[in-house]
Length: 301
Image 1 (spheres, rainbow, N blue to C red):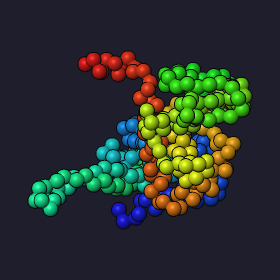
Image 2: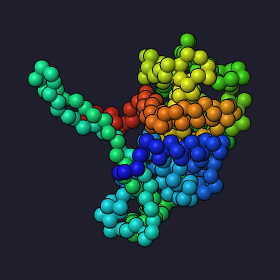
Image 3: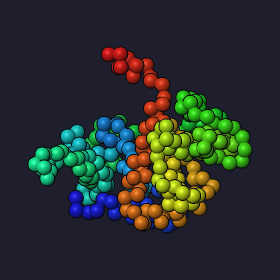
Image 4: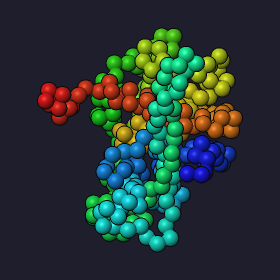
């Protein structure tokens, strides 16, 4: 693909930030989704991860798509369906490595893995005619936000993290390795409480005993700080989608926008790195959950 993937994606996100918008919250703030919360899905129902989540969320909002399902032209054709005439695809990316054998100065051969990224186009099912009916079904409505959310509480309880209750601020303390949260009643809605908690729990994964994530942060507000906050923002958005929660922008997100803009404009790969770190954080938190009965049976087999 001739276009520069590493430039195309940050250009779109930078444009949103310059308008004061967070690309990763758009699917919920846009009226076309009616509050429905779900990650973009492949043709087989498996969710996209990392940077592709941001790219397809953005494409869905821009084009007004409600369905979370996406597939390639070939996949649609294999199902006996066809992409509507004149429809354009949306970019997703695939990262992998190739192994190259190189001869060293001493004459010995050494294998070296070279990372690469390729892009390809997918279409939302609303751009495709003739698919099985279940692809066109509307996503389920969000849960009732009138009370504490049991499955979210169970998710956070399983992490074994120290979460202290009380005070006026939410933060993660690396020194004492604990998350501080205002009381549940202090938030305007259950969703705002859990959205804040999942942001801080993403920070919790950076500890050296977990993912050991470090961006060279020296002081509050520097580039390393901005990069970590961007990872926490994206990680929270990914996890909110996984847990069927409604993410909300923090009261201080506007203050971060300028620092995020500086990072993204200086390094066109920064958003890819942040999304990858955010996905690893989300995967780590999911990995802390107890195995389901089906998973246990599969392991035993």
